Amino acid sequence: MNNLHAECNVTVVKANDTVDDIKTEPTIKIVFHPNGGNGEPPVPLTKLGGVWPDKGKLNKPGYTFAGWDEVQNIQDPSKARYRPGDKLPFPVPLKELMITVYAQWIPDKPPEHVHKFSGSWITYTNPTCTKTGTQKRPCESNCGTYESQTIPATGHKFGSWTDTGVVGTHVRKCLNPGCTAQESSSHTFSAWLTNGSTTHYRSCVVCGRKETANHSMGNWSDFSSTQHRRSCSICNYYEYGSHVYGTKSGNLFYCNFCWRKKSLIEK
Image (cartoon, rainbow, N blue to C red; front, side, top):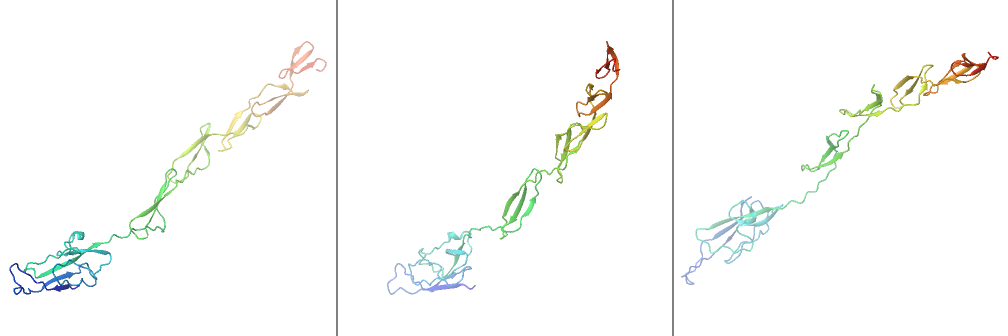
């Protein structure tokens, strides 16, 4: 962009000059450089004792005018040497016949960014049975900010109970990949059931483990005129047998097992 400038004629009055001695010195130019701004510069100054003008019709979107300076791009525009309303430095030395000043612009503070998250969640850390995971999604403006949310721990997913082979317990293991957790518990057995004339059995209602044991038979007792019986104290299995008379006491005979008595006449 070409320099925009304003010109003014300045009459310099020396201390010993009379009215007749006063003469017009060469024209002095004050050149207002927009320095990236758009529009027209300030109205030219035409007399002594004036002040530095504002930006006039200059503007620069996203920036605020701070003043003028002979240096085009000063490090801190807020410290511009000539501010609107400051007195002009006149009269000037005759050697300064051309003055170029540059508009100084301060960047406006950008409006506060409001994040907007609406994209798909991306899993960064998968949850495990006991630890939470993490999901993130970026701000739509790609400003580098992410919204995060926690994925709950999955918890163990245990399989079926299996017999360990160790008396008294069964176990079940977590089926989730990479998890080695397992839990154990004591068997829960059903009631003993008869398994024939010599044994009975019971099963764990959880894992199916089966245990077998011999009957624990009680004493024989008289059951009928021809038989006696006894039962397993655990499964209530009954075993029957015929009376065997052999012990004699006076006129009576007794069964050797249940002590049922029988007279000599009956025998």
